[in-house]
Image 1 (cartoon, helix red, strand yellow):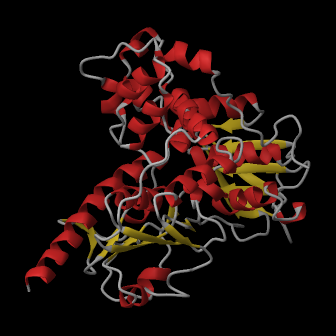
Image 2: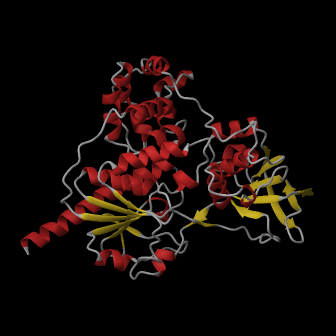
Image 3: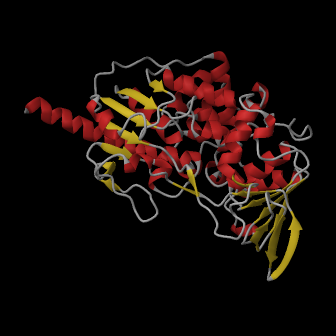
Length: 437
């Protein structure tokens, strides 16, 4: 069983109605709201906070929906301290409005009470195929369905959500929250096909042959990078995204305990210091590891993880090794020890599992089964600015992590919103040319 001290139950509690309204009333309603400037998707933050302060939750969620398809997700996992809350004028006094927690409260209240159900637009503007149902794919689907497009999502997993479902642990983002968000997307008329792998079951050419006017590829970066160190191929050396996926499946009762590669009492070393590394370390704690260490070659000031994630990891017992790196992994049939180098001093330490969280690159499955899609020397899909997001293959668009280095959920959404505008302009232009031909 998972560690009972640190369970998979969500760690951050929501507001009560009274607490949420009290917090909302602290907003100054700035003439030039810096919180909105700090939000990558330009959420109309003061407007919906004002509605919340008056108790008008239906109006609040309606305003949020104009910019965000995933408010309950963003309210939980966005980098608020660097974005909206980090720009709040009250933050100069250390009293920034807790925007993320308020957004989560409004979105959860809407999901529970079903306050706002949008009217369906007639889907006569064009057919769009969306590959992948992560943040980018869901954003494209929601934005374009609202604009009158017929959207079909193709997802390789048995359940939609992508990294929201399988990459972010339950204690940070409960799976039922993701399912509620996806149900809201479906309610807009979006059709989702699961267990369909594009590049195997179907190709890009097959989708165009089915009559889609454009295709969006939002497949993310599912192929992990590997460090070239001795012992890297030993059993017990795992990739963070693989470990998190298995832990998620186990927590949903879809996998046996012994199939998760961290056992009770094991000593675990995680390489990297981004949010994925933090997730892996804190999940290992919950799976019952006796020791969990994060190894990072830079300092605490250089880590890409949020400070709040670091603080919570420390509180849960994760140990950090700064200016350090693993030089070798030892063992015969399984990991037994590591050589840890810290400021030119090397120590051999006992270890049972080493988890690599050093980033991912795009898989080549789709690109290798279709003609005309160019990638850069790192495997990222090349896109153009006009129409925004279109690849070197006419009518095929791409966005999110597959076109650049992996970023946060909201940055994938920001990019996808811009690509959606590019697709709309492209399809409208094609339809116009067909009408006058």
